[in-house]
Image 1 (cartoon, rainbow, N blue to C red):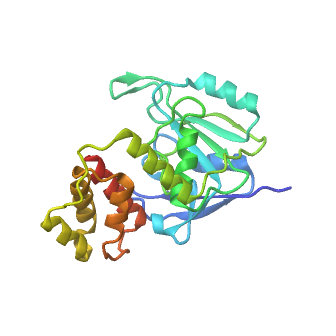
Image 2: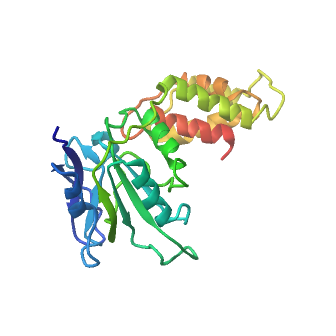
Image 3: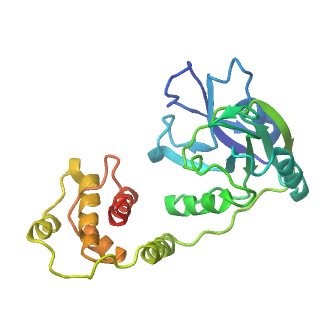
Length: 273
């Protein structure tokens, strides 16, 4: 059986935003090296993504699919030699390469810094919640990977040196729960962490009641969700109750504001971050 993979790549001027990407089809896995590794001179020019886009512009709205899990390790745990040995023992098809700051001082620390790329048996989940659930599980599967490099349309600089690139079996991630199950689990986690902070009273101030009744205008959605959730939380309402109240307020989604963004602002407001 012939395996085919696709990634996105771009070569642009240094310090550009690298927003326009071309889909690259890879007929042989080892061919990925020409896109994920670069010389010192080309390093500032090239960016690539494991994700494939529905058109050439990099944005979460244009995400189409992803056939890879890509993990960056930059804190010395695990070491490069440990990872090279472990991934060989497991027999997965993979690419392992050092990143730009490998064994160089960064944030006051000199250590092994490298990237592991695993082709997948099946594409990553489409849902943001299920995608993030899979990636968070992978962060601690072998040591501790960088949790800032896991979003759907994350772009990467090329590696500076190949440590190993090998055929083998395709990696398969653990099946994630449904969106509803993930959201419910998160609500329970937050409520365990933040029990009732004040004795609950159903008598909310008139000004807060008025804000809950009135529609939220487009330019104030994020701020309003945060402020209202924060205020409701101060009166002892649970996280689930707060989500239900804020979600009932009329507001328009779109223009970069979606259900996920609403939940993020409600969560941060209720937690008082």
